[in-house]
Length: 188
Image (cartoon, rainbow, N blue to C red; front, top):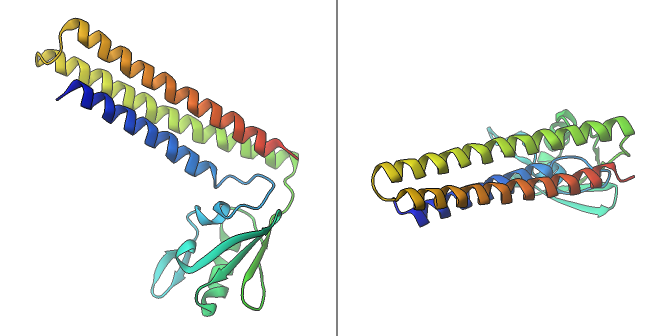
């Protein structure tokens, strides 16, 4: 394997791990309404003989800072969507309107905010575990390339240093995202 290609693949995989964590952060409730709160969650609606994601059945918008509006493409699915949101782990209580659902986002208590921060830290730790696994793969790849005489001992050390630099960059990026999300969650 080409050493430069191996570095690019490692960098790409680490970036995807950070992006996935960012995607997961969108499902963490802050105090304000965000379509990603229920759009990105695995809220499944039993419809048309199968379970479908909410965003496949409706348009989700945030007309006010503490309100989400869910407009179903097919009005006959409104009750099923309402039930799915109510039964999700979010603890939201939607109310049906004439053509859409209104989902008020209640103010978070201090205790609930701290729980959300714990969840954010748990998600970040999962991302860091993935980054460390990718680092190990990169280091093992360098050793294998040296064993296959693709790399010299000096170039193996350079390759490992590059993998470590990518790891440090990804971990720093995760820490910055966690700090920003924690600040957002704790903001009243």
